[in-house]
Image 1: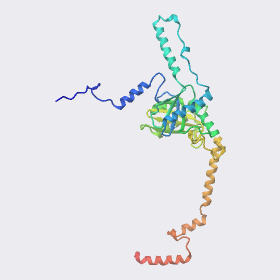
Image 2 (image 1 turned 30 degrees about the horizontal axis):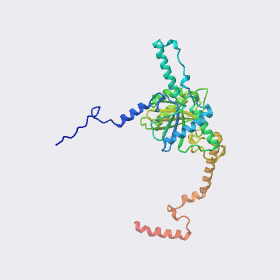
Image 3 (image 1 turned 30 degrees about the vertical axis):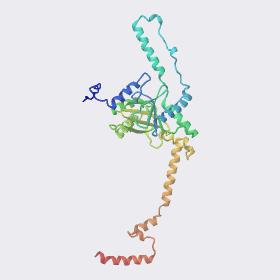
Image 4 (image 1 turned 135 degrees about the vertical axis):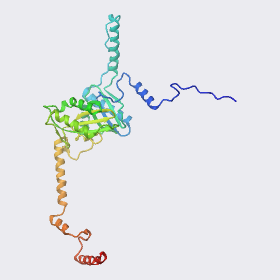
Length: 342
């Protein structure tokens, strides 16, 4: 009887590699000279939420950002390899100079490959992060939303919200406080001042507390200038806090309520009140509408005399509105009910 062939033992002790090891190896291969491939502290960019189709979202984001980026900053320029700076030919014998020249060439080639917009892994589903280079995320996104708000022209299908991210840090309270003290100065440090609100969103993170983060950031804003006031209806500035895993993304944006919380699907819809171009007029019109609704509710309510009649009416409200003969039958039923209760 022939003996069965034995398979050679697998490398690494005969154990099969787990899926996590393959994922880490894939990420290591992708972390080439073209920059970081996942969201990490120190990046600037644009955080985009979508509806179940991240690949289509990235395509729409590239198209939209390149269109308005060229409008604001001009066409993207690339450097040819032949135009890279090179050292003098006479210094080839010096080893130290040769090493410096090689390092400089590597850095130059790396910078040449960096694009103005580059998608990186966000760490959350239905969320895309576009790393930016050499632009101001708040200025670009505000320009996009302002144009879409005025023209009412829909340019995306799967992109929902587009939030600029001006700074990122580690998602721990002490790191966030230390980072925010300097990050918030351009908007809130005296003599600059303004009304503000703080919006908070956390994804794939369980160790941060929403109320605690908002309280600490609001305290920092107040410490920069005591005249900074909270306004939850129509603030001048909105501090956006987006936490994804262990990374905290921060930005300060304008016209947050006017541009429908930076939602590209909502901002192109026709507004009922054309005065929404001015936030103060928008808030005033909204208050007037609420006052009208309250006055209508008060007019619909019963008069004071009717309220007194309701208070003096019997407990059985279903007897209200009946004629007097029914009141006599009510007395009869009450009399008939007494012996049964006794």
